[in-house]
Image 1: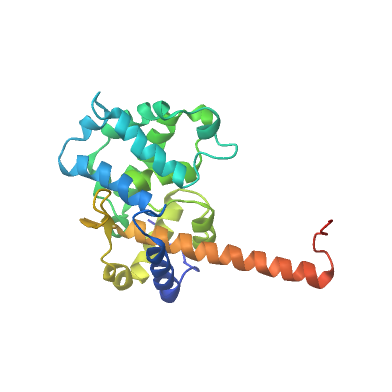
Image 2: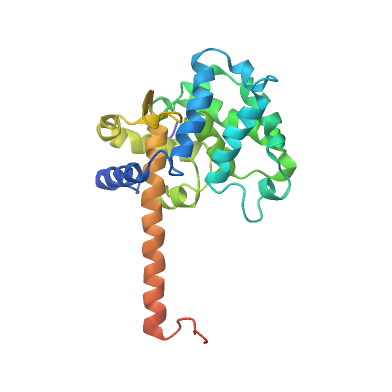
Length: 249
């Protein structure tokens, strides 16, 4: 796999961004919705019972877990097909597809982004798009949000992350860039021993955040900062040049 020069977050950026994210993560905060979703699907993987995700007993709960996580991260708003066309029941086909996917998808993390594993990740992307309906044109943001919440094997390619990583498409090149970022900051990422929050107790579980989730957090927070900084500069320029929007009372 050809390496791409990374001109993005440095060690301090990553450290500050992850700490900022964790400071905001509380049992009742939306950031914890990842924890509850990932815990749910990971436990089926851990108990070697993935097929049960889509059985009559668990299908509704599986749809609810994934659906609320996606809603809390903005995937069911605006003009998205998830808002316009979907009820939670429509996620049943996706849950069925997930229940039939390879166990290895829960074992892939950024440190193991080699050619074979990247191929599996991109195959997973295509299976998710098929399950959602290719005619709906599922975005990379939606697909990677799903993969993050279920497998935690890739960061979510949302607006903030794309800005921070300068990675605008979920493909081999971008995954290579993420791997290079990890390699340059391996000691830092491995120093964070963050565990998911349990829904019932509000306390930490024994399930660790993956490096993909850590990089997702770093990219999300750093990208948010960059976007806010750009908006601030634009406002200052508008005021300086007299082009600020008029306020009519």
